[in-house]
Length: 161
Image (cartoon, rainbow, N blue to C red; front, top):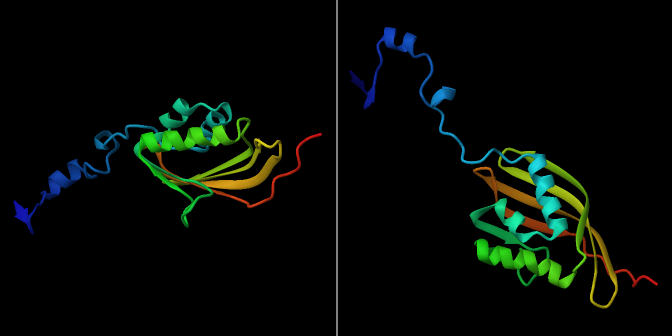
């Protein structure tokens, strides 16, 4: 029997199937990847500190977007797609070969997350960078779809003597 374009179940059928297929766990569509957790973000941070671009890209969706802390646009610089993001990630180590993201704290709420860190590195002239920042993430299907980086604007510290 149809009612308003939908199949109407009899009382006995409704009693036999109390939950819809969409809400019953045995009929739920499996997610391709487990959801992102704070442990996921900690592992992502560890990959940054190892300068391991292949590991970093394994956390990202195929249509990922990375917005840098600095750049010509209001968002910094926007890199879209795996090849552009891979190149931008690797560029961070070209500028500061000893770059590290220390003291990480990670937070996840549903499809959004934040990593807070202190960025350190040595510039080509020997001056030191040490500044706090955050990454704001958007997740999809257990991966990072958007990484939006922000960091404090602080002058470089004098070179170590």
